Each structure stands twice: as C-alpha cells, then as structure tokens.
Image (cartoon, rainbow, N blue to C red; front, side, top):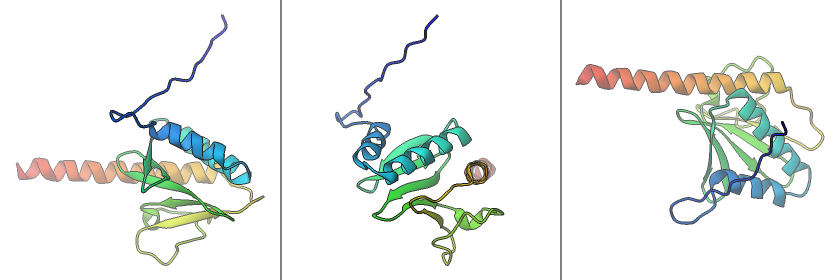
Length: 148
C-alpha cells in the first residue's frame, strides 16, 4: 500500500503562518548554502529530539524548545549560528562550541560554508540541552509542591 502525505497548512488564531511554516519559508528564501545548512541543522535537532517544538521569535529567529529553549538557528551572510540557551552548562567533548565562549550562560556554534558537522556530537549536545531543561523543570516543579 502506498502511503501518501500532504502538507497541512496551519495557522495561528490570528491567521498568521505557523512557526514551522515560517522556518520552511526562511530556508526557501536562503537560496544558498545557508538554507541547506539551516535545513540540515533542523533535521538533526528533530532526530535528536522528536518532541521538539519549533517557534518563531524575536522578529524572525527560528527557535527549538523542549521544556525551555534548546537553541536558535540564526543566519548571517557568512555563517549559520546555533546558539544554545544554556550552552555554558553543557559538556562539549567534541569542541563544537566556537562562539560566544566568554558568556556565563550561552554558547554558540558558528557554521561556515563548506564546514563539516559532527552530526553525532551535535545530536548528543542537543539531547544534553533537553535533559538539562527537563531537570530544571522537574526541580522547579518539586519546589512548588514543597511550598504548598
């Protein structure tokens, strides 16, 4: 039996395109290596965390969340930047973080044209970020119950 799929257009209550559709449009409008890289990064994020939620924030920044922000996917002229909201708290044995290294909270990965990505290491970093978000959420949930 042949399985068919169709695109389902989803809109927000105010008639706006969904966050996923906006990310699709961003990838399509970047008619070069940056669009391909953003699509690849997006695929890896979804593979690492099938429960990830896509958001569109700050006037045009793709954001991936699960119990809080995991990372953003910004595109610039010469780089696709993945900024991890709590990157400073993550272990990075593969040395993927190469930007925003001086901050106390965030860390970023600048991906340049032609650069190879260690997909397994990136997925591990994403999973680690999700685990951290979930542990913080559980900790907060536990605190609120103790006060009640």
